[in-house]
Image (tube, rainbow, N blue to C red; front, side):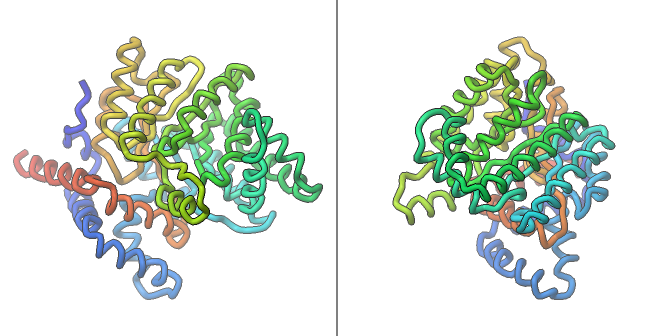
Length: 406
């Protein structure tokens, strides 16, 4: 029986000094006024080049949640995790990216560099990409809007929307597809999984369609490409089942990363402003129920679905292991993987690893000024998610006390 309360396993990779630093950080993030002040000042301090700002950030919140500023700087982190049978999902944490065709081409090249680098390390089976780094946001919005007005399956709506583009826009989209094909082919050739991040609802449909096309091409024998499904949306459990039907009809392995979601407040605000029904679940219980149902559906069809259970929820992770046990399947079955963000929920990650699960840390990297949006989300998440900071702090205190007595 897996226990997520074993702090000796959870924090074995951290020294006393590192554990005390984590205690200080989570204590600070437990104070909303301090978090709000920091979030307001941090981007400005970086922009204005205020002395020591980068150094302070790098030694505190950056080192807690980010692997380094460069690919090479992630190596010691990956190796340290690997010593405890924890793998790594590399994420080039630049958001928004450079505008223009040359900027999008550069982003594609950077993603391929990550794939090439992953092959040099023993415990980096996956990397992630954001389609918004490879395409003009407005074009995604335009295609999504056209798809929302069409009827039929996702792929029929996609084909209809592409047919409505002007000749210039169609050429622009073909370049986007070519970039994603290049990345996925590199992943396929180098045996590195490519996880396509979820986006906001008003651009998600073309991302879903593009990801299905990539799976159709590259997931014929094993999962290379994975779509990210946000279960805090009330329509995503049905979408998962539709994706499975598409995989069956097209004879490819469905790759999915199951998350709860990342844009809740933004989604609700936009829905209210534009007067359309919110795409977000009515409450946390509904989100949890759909997430756990999605995990169960994937394990029920585990021969045809490769799933990454990307969750900080203890019950969801435990439930997945119980479902594997019920089917007599090993915790390291090639079609199931677990993952948590670097710097959070070590009690889940390292206890899963100890039980023999295939598990990883999602490890972003990039220049400090470029990963500020990611760091701001982590600070907000730990400040606002009920019980998250308290849980982290409680476990750290428990381990510090245990070490004193040891």
